[in-house]
Structure formats: C-alpha cells, structure tokens
Length: 85
Image (cartoon, rainbow, N blue to C red; front, side, top):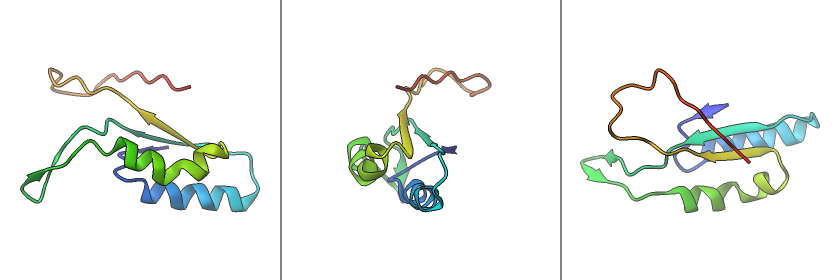
C-alpha cells in the first residue's frame, strides 16, 4: 500500500516489480489528488494524469488506484474509510 501517490512513479515501479515476480499481489495506491502548494504555486488535480501513467498496471490488475475525498473541515485523519472497486 502506498499513501500519497503524486503522479504514480513509485506505484509504477512497485507494480512492475510485482508483475515481474509472478506473484499474485495487488498494490493499492491511495491519494486524494487535491491541489497542493508546491514550490510556492498551487498544483492542479493530477488524478487523470496519474491514472494514465498507471493504466498498463491497473489494466493488468496489479495496481489499484484509489482516489479518496478529502474533507477540508477535518483537522486530523485519525479515522479514514476507503472504498475501492
């Protein structure tokens, strides 16, 4: 499991290694993909870009990309619930 996917580089690496191992494993990659401040500028929602980057691995069922909704009114993440397809 990876929490904080950004554009999917680490998830892609892990997915390829899992695929090459021949083991039946699934790697869950989780992020809210909300715009963030990077180097003084706000980023765009990069979910679609990340989804395209990981498409070969998600199509194989090796990587499970999960987008969760971030509730800005919460101050902490003591309890999170995820649902994936």
